[in-house]
Length: 174
Image (tube, rainbow, N blue to C red):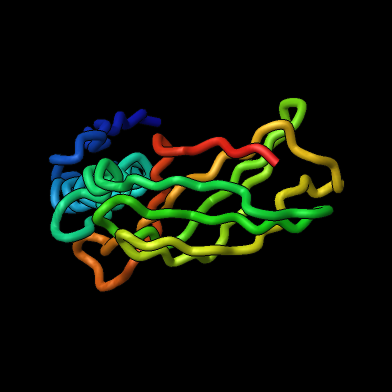
């Protein structure tokens, strides 16, 4: 009996994405490019949405940033009458810009509460109004600060937004 030796045939295993063998392993360059482009766009969208939170809307009044218009606000506030928790106070607008409303910050022992009062005070005019100036627990606050708020247009949108002029707070006593 005669032993016949068979010759082994070389098989191309094709581990390269450019191989032309029968068993391809890997991605074609077109599919790889498409996947990379999709990944970059996805990451760019995430970065855009994340960064958008750091960029505030630009509010304008008379075509200028509303922060500049706060410098034109000049007002005085005084308590006229009051008993219990309701107080009447007078606001005089000495400036040349309308005050849209007021924010009143009441503070006591490190706690503070902010209330918004719809007071439209035209430039050069005065207004009287009633407000609840006590803390929510019914106690008298140690300090009361009144801030003017202006209304302006949001740049690039057809909407208005209220802006509080924090640097112009006036303290009142009751």
